Length: 258
Length: 110
Image 1 (tube, rainbow over the protein chains, first blue to last red):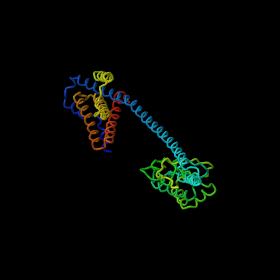
Image 2: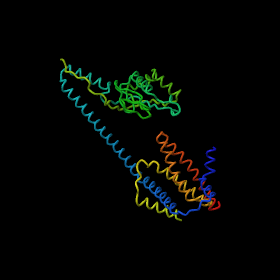
Image 3: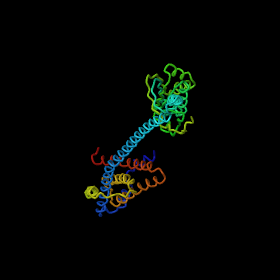
Image 4: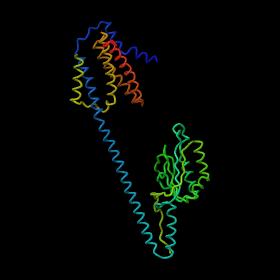
């Protein structure tokens, strides 16, 4: 407080009073004052000019960044489309290579049964939608946030409850998908999620929700919802559409031995 | 009168000539301007109180600007540049307001 008092009480340089008391002759060299005033004026003008000048530059940089992001997103969409068409091509070639005998039909049936389970193809059907989110007090207490382990438990509980396909915020889970924390965000397939977390699971509409709620995962999330006041909403949905996991690639192929 | 004319001439010169400030000095320009404003207001108040001496003004202006810039420069080197800039602006801002109030009292008796 003393500092502030001093600033307020002596706002003028004390030298003015001292110089007057010493009896310095008042102002002959008026031109120094004029020059100094000119410098100050120029300072104002230059600073104002620079600030107004840099505003459009910042704006254009921002627009350019946005453009680049959008271009990258379009490129990603194109590549995604290419992945889908190539997978279709693989399926056709596979069917052609298998031929048309009984063994081939058995193999085709196995492939058709396994594809949706491993997340290789897009699937749709009835299921449940679970929306979870941090509790409102998450900013104050880190324990009130949804962690990667909470989502792992949730996904495992759904598998246990008989889910045939699961996706989190549109990322399809396969048995190679990692649900991990990276910094402040939870990542699925190494892509970060934004809250709230929407977990969609396709399964038997009569039993999936009940079996999930009765499992240990259901108990885990009941506890989080009641004690940590996290958002936890579970609802039946008639029609869910889950995309294929783009991370699925053909890792092993061999010539049929028959 | 001469200082006012000089100020106007400086503004016009600055706009017309558009001198480019070196990139290194650019962060210190706003701080220098706040220090200059403080020196201006202090000088005007001293003028109204009849104690104005242009030698003191010149010296106080130059030292104010240099010290303010130096404080911010040192702050930048040790990683608290933004905070020290805030400190300079707060202290000089208080002085400007106090001086402006005194000038208002002296000019308008209010």
